[in-house]
Amino acid sequence: MDFNLTEQQQMFKNSVKKFAEQELTPLVDTMDKQNNFPHEIRPKLAAMNLYGIPFDPKYGGAGADHASLALALEEFAKILAAMAIHLQLQHVVNDRFNKLATEAQKKQWMPAICEAKKVGCFGFTEPDTGSNPKMIKTVAKEVKDGYIINGAKRFITNAPWADVMCVFAKLEGDISLFFVETNRKGFSTGPKMDKLGLRGTDLSDVFFEDVHVPKDHLMGGKGGKFDALKDAMTIGKLCLSAQCVGLMQASLEEAIKYSMHRMHFDEPIFNLQAIHWLLAEMASRLEAARWLTYRAAFLKDQGQDTIKDMAITKLFVTSTAVDVCRWGMQVHGAYGISKEYKIERLFRDAKMYELLEGTSEIQRELIVKRLPR
Image 1 (cartoon, rainbow, N blue to C red):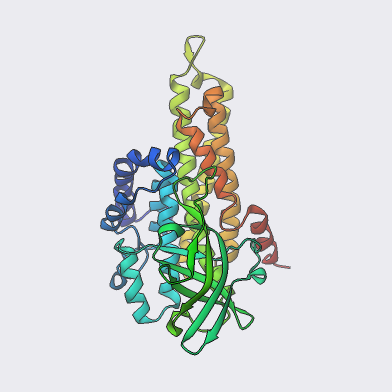
Image 2 (cartoon, one colour):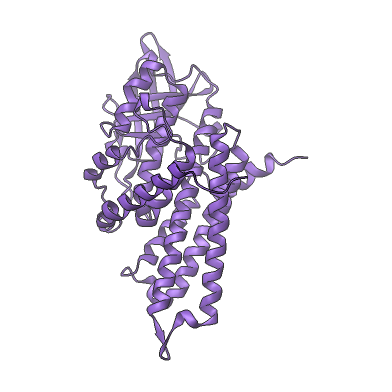
């Protein structure tokens, strides 16, 4: 077992850290307070090749690995988690094209997404589905020259301004996957959601009213795409876990900084045993979460079936992030609830991660189903 980053991974991490500190810090208010996405950052992300980290350069990617993807998202989330979510989503969409699309489709969409010329979104969740794919009500009907799609999707990030959407729909009673250009007749989006954390990611509902797509918009053939959904969610869970590591690191740093400067009876509260215990808990949980996440990335790079491992990682890391950010807020005392301090935003963002890509309760079910008996 080698717990060291390679020289290339460490250099990449350092470059992303510098980029995030310089470019994302000025965008915090735009996303969190104004709840708007700063589109001017997208060409800069593309110039750093951050939209296609683990993908083949012939499709516009950087040719790196999932460990590098995790490192990048960790550094982004330390500064602005909402931007890390945007980055994650482009990788999830590109991953579907990479694994299921034809060569022509890959060359059409993957470089365009990697170069920030196009934006993708991902559509599985519906008003009545939760995490149960059997409850999907979006349907596709085959016609002579393609397919007609009807239905609705909920909580779709980037939907108001995406160019293409990966859509799970029932075709002949089984789940199939399509890609749909968002400018097609009958495609529409609802109002942008005003939410607790990860603000500025532009979440909305999507509606399909007799949306027609050609035959070649069916990805990977008819049916059997529940496995494709589970595979896509392993990427998502890895990305979310990496972002939680970044949130925890930022929370620990903020707690230490505050406790070193906040005075109590002529000495910093950092000297109090109660603060020591909080900081020690934060540091130990952070390290456990970090190495569980890095291990999950390693397994993904080995091509292993990671459904159980990603569920374990997502369950532990996201719930731990809420605890760590809560303890960081506790160190701040009453000032922790003030929007003048970064810890307030970190705590709000951390809670969001417990609910994305399947709630903690769903992760527990996935884990138990795969335990040896």
